[in-house]
Image (cartoon, rainbow, N blue to C red; front, side):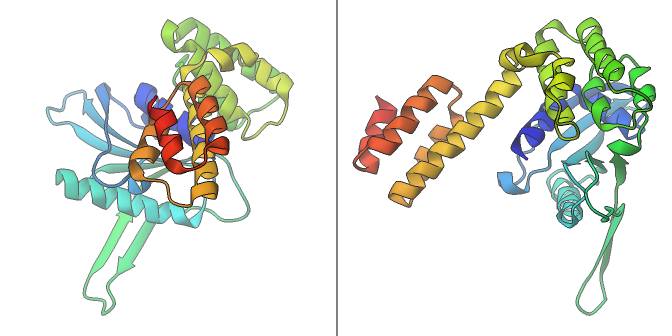
Length: 279
């Protein structure tokens, strides 16, 4: 699910206010995405957004967690998100859960209650949950918001799909920042692919050209290649030092990643690979 996660996180960073609008958040005067640095990456919230609302002097902290499917582990992540941000900032955040696509019969609850073993202590955490497939595509399109357009393919569409996809593209190309249009179109294609397995439909959202030109998609490809490279190194040499892992994951040059992948398959030992990486 890496491509969906990466695409969603890009939208949080660049169009976090639009995501909050999906949850019914109004009167946003200004906003900024904060770097989530409270704990190790495996436990980080997908996004932390600081919002200044109209008429309020103090900012409001929102945690955004995006789940591809409604899975039981999501509620545990939401509990961790709320507690981690509270411990870090001493402010209880507003928690928003965005679920992209239904799967099976399980429905994610909007609250979790945790009790201590003897029952002396009880913790209840609630969140605002947004199930994309319950939202109206027409309502989102009516806003002409380019930050909402990539989510439209996952919403409730009445009538033929093709005109809806075409309108998504027109909104992005007309109202989206020029330097973000290719990424918005590419992210829309990635998210649409979660629901539709039709290249013809995805072509309506910009086709291969948007995918090639998009910086966010280039990052997704680079991350995939980096993980493949680490898999090869672990298969050959078992343990990969943390500095080597960090250096590989930081690479964004696709050609260099391909060359290192070839080196990983050919090098006699890990030191030889390290020398090649540093050369």
